[in-house]
View 1: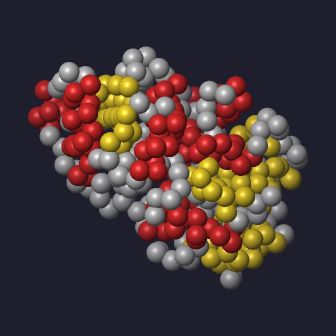
View 2 (view 1 turned 45 degrees about the vertical axis):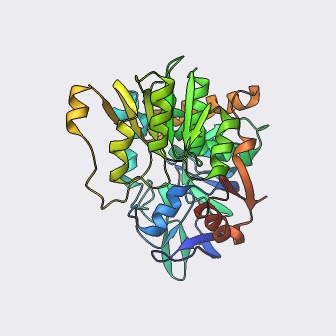
Length: 370
């Protein structure tokens, strides 16, 4: 069948919206008509080369849509179901899935290769080339064929443009606070970078019962938005945040600090670690360039103050557990999703959306297809 998609043909190029050919789903695959896709920074990392991936590629890994067709071995979905994409596939059978770490599922080995799980053959083609889907999802398209392991069924009454955000940004940020930082009632938490991921780290810290939440970002719009999501204090950089946290805790410092900047740089880890107390935790959720191998860090402080540094992929949770859970929180009013969307765009406006993101004009832009 024919579809339209936003493709990346080369590093640092704009997204090219064009007609593509899409194959029928294999027995374990599903054809989805996309309703909405979030403009996440991870797709920008593909464009800049910070995340290595086979090109040409179709972007988008944060989305929601409606099932149109299923393969004859698909057991969890049927036509008409509403679904959210999971950029971390979950097989439910490997060591990591059955051991309680589905974000490390062995199917993740295919993520950056763009080779479909079923047989490694691209489902989408354009200009005579096979097109690799970002994170096996590639939801910057009107239609897409995905493996069943990359989809999570949701309730049909949920607005799909809001549900799309839980596909990545909300779950990753929320889980970074709840699962990885293990925020407890009364904790002091610092979130460094409050865009699409960090805003939800703020929400996660609030919902976990944090006493004080300090949102750090140079962009005033983002600091103000963070207040409405639960931040009790804000600062434009980590150095001013240190003075603030030092004063409010009488020198004990924060229990946890979460790095959710647009791009992680090695020189940020040391100052962020200095924000946390003895035995405190620094969570690194932001993506660093693949080639970066050096960090600015005091090993003396790490050892003698018994601090911890933890990485966080998908917030350290489970797509099939956390996505429905967070959407239930949204329905009951404790999780804010509507407020996260600064602006919506058509697929043809995708480059404008990413320009707005780079300029700090949106918390989260969303491409709406319907």
